[in-house]
Length: 300
Image 1 (spheres, helix red, strand yellow):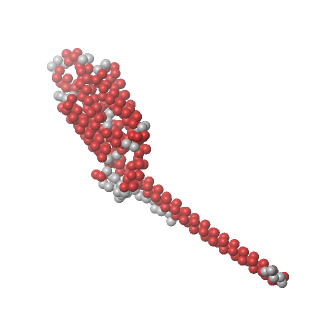
Image 2 (spheres, rainbow, N blue to C red):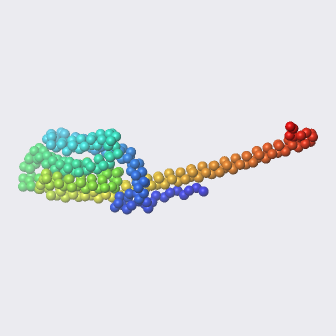
Image 3 (spheres, rainbow, N blue to C red):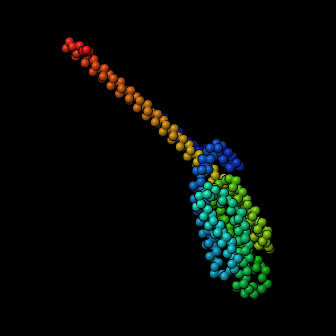
């Protein structure tokens, strides 16, 4: 009788506030070992995508002749991505890539805040020094309103572009899933970012932009936590289902081997019985033939 197909269930997992860990310690260890190759490839993809993104976006401003300070944050981001990529090929670090990627969270938060602050300030300075004075002369009497609109436009553009640079971190954290490392990393990212804003003061007089930054990072954080929960639950259910299938296949293989053994024993017994019956018949025929000829079947 075929075994029923296993159904994925969370009965062998702890609740989400305990990160969906398996109740069986051996199963939890096997899950972590099984995740190492996938986490390693994901970290390499993250490093390449992260570096490419921070190389591409600054190229949009090369023609504006901005100071070197403008390119410092993306350069640091590229160095960080290359460092992660190099670590992923060092055998001593390969089992710890998940932790390494999570440790760069606060570093990315610092660079993210510096990028928003410096880019907003430098881009505003560059725009005001280009053709804006002429426009201000034409808009005499509305200079303050025009300046506020320009500030809002430039800083909004910078916030959106810098938020795009968080996408690789969001994706790799989602792939790693819900665990103490990702929660701590994402929290440290937020704390580091707001501490840098407070220290640098890059948004002095731009209170609305702080609201935009808080709204976007807050929305991304809520989406991140939800994604962590869904991704972790899905991966662990998939692993549990795979283990159940392997156990079912092993049981069916064992049952098939036992059934095949029983059939072989039955065939062997029948063959042996038939052979012994044939031998007994041959012996009886031999004695009958000897008796008919009147010879002693056991001559001395």
